[in-house]
Length: 80
Image 1 (tube, rainbow, N blue to C red):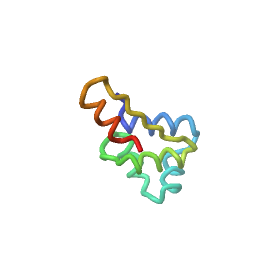
Image 2: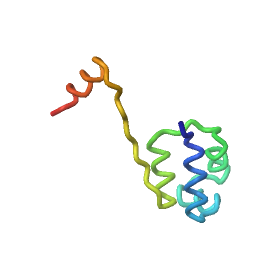
Image 3: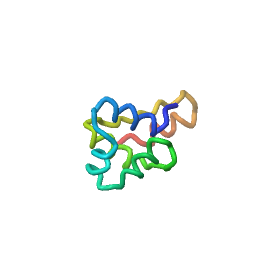
Image 4: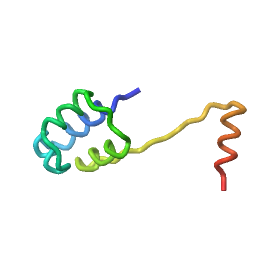
């Protein structure tokens, strides 16, 4: 599993942005960016996506269900 802080750090390095620039883009203090990078914040998927978007990255989520009776039911019940 990859931690949200690892995704943010990777995107920050790839973007060439500084922590200060990212903080300004998000309208948060630089200390908030530092806390996110250290994994000191529980971050929602929405905040993670917004943070990555500010650096020109996109968050993609995927769920792989194992083949079991309960997952088959979930897959079938979610169909239109």
